[in-house]
Image 1 (cartoon, rainbow, N blue to C red):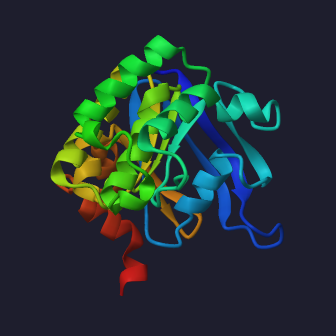
Image 2: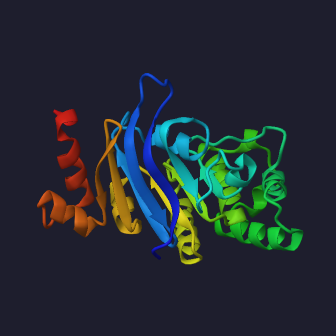
Length: 248
């Protein structure tokens, strides 16, 4: 479990070179690990994710997956992760099944393996009857399920997950968390950005708290309790303590 799959090293960057949003960000996600990325709105979570996805160029430092940066080989780099965005992005002219087929094609998934995984996902997320539906007939939760199923279909080494359970019904949330745990057991490194701290506390192995574009605290819950001298604190307690000047 010590192998660092996703590494963010001395990352400074943002949208304008002279106005960085992130300042010297350092953290990693290991194999078989879920790391929770926690922070207030505007703390830098989305900017960090965009740098990881290769959508922004860093002013200093780098992001790597299995020692490869997006500058080394952009196509190969992007095939090494799956991204589940907060806002689902679907093609109006493709059915649910065709979305899954397109994902399988993009990642070179063999037909038999694709059908096996796709049918299991449809069953688990209770979407079998909707496989020929178009996105215009989907609720927000259904659209989110399509993005989640597409990500779990390919089983890459890294998952980048942004507010994954917003809009999901309780069954969808449970299915998502079950699959997330399964991917971790299979060796995936998972970075999950979320505001739902009770869920993060239950499912994440470690946490990275961002504040004003800097990592202000990271570690397991127990390690963070020791660092903050709050021996019985919940993740909520620690989060509020580390960002309390913004909440006044």
